[in-house]
Image (tube, rainbow, N blue to C red):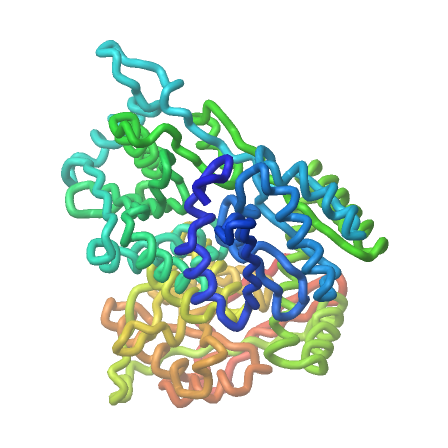
Length: 566
């Protein structure tokens, strides 16, 4: 590995072992070893066959920023030839080699070798990785190398000085890394939810991979888990590596509550400054991704390639066509937005197919189509009767909802597409700050149910497509959700009882609503101590809409009215 043009931590034995341990069952490892005439090891190809598609790729393709066939450059042609020949002998018809460095000898060898093995080769640029060559940085008045961004770092330190001085801590041993690894993982997932995305660390296999990698790389102390603290509070993290003269910027994140001060930017500034003071480090590699902040630091770049090999003429040209189509879409921001929306809808449909089957999914789609033309929806409104929540022996607790709780839920229910969609919606609502969220959690902190509360007056009810008007002291529970895996256990009833009791204790009147079609929810509301007060009925044909009210004969006039608009 050290005889490669650019030795990388991704090429190490430790990295391959961590992937194999974490992804057992999902990948079938294929390890090719080459020996010279003296029986000395001269080549290693750590590959894997996907269990579903049968496609062969680099074992570290989904985790490593750089992947390659490992050998001395002078042996590369012979070694790649031998590996491809063996793959073809095994009947492999599809190969995809991602994140291959463009400056590697393999980039020149593999198109020629593929032709000799009867494969068609398609090569495209994958990423352009920003790098910082430390020797090229500007020098200060004292002649020392200076990291860019020092002014912003000083501004951040001043703005957050009330919490304590800024300092950066680096952990390299497993004993030091183990206690702070989980907080880092949770912070990364929370940060992505905050920007409307699902982090790859929400995936259990990916988290297992980082844990295994941490244990393995901490032994030679190639791992560096950094934290930037303001006093005792951690405001930014970075999971990276120091290896063979390079400090690799792998997975950073930060606390979104201090986002306006650019904490991630400031941590990178501090890391660069420390790297300039370490004679063993010559380069800071910012890795895959074209985030804007990287351009403010980079003074060098390194290209990676995606290489696809097919024995089939049709599959080869299909790959080329997909790439060209994707490139055309990315060239148009408006078109890319439409495609992203369609992709998200497709992801939801796949979730419905997996969870409910084809028949229910088709019925759901037909119902949505009908509702786009004609709607008759009755929504029931219930008021809390000020009764006491029933005692629960399961040690469940009602907690305020925040990004950390959403992150825990995303990691817990990573396979539940509908719940992930709900969590993204909740994160957006948290950022808007116009409602309060709650979760029901078990004694281990596992989220079991989610619900929201907002002022009744002025609330826009999506089922009615109308804005509601009510007395100022009324609060409305809405958007309740139980993840699929924990349904049917009474969590909905328990949660709304606890929230209603809390609202009543604040001197407010708790309300909740439910469409009549949700029979189970209506039944649960009665058992939870909510009393029906009135109904609102929405009638819509194409773009024409009316909303009418209905109350029991024995009740006084409804306490809420609506102003409907389409």
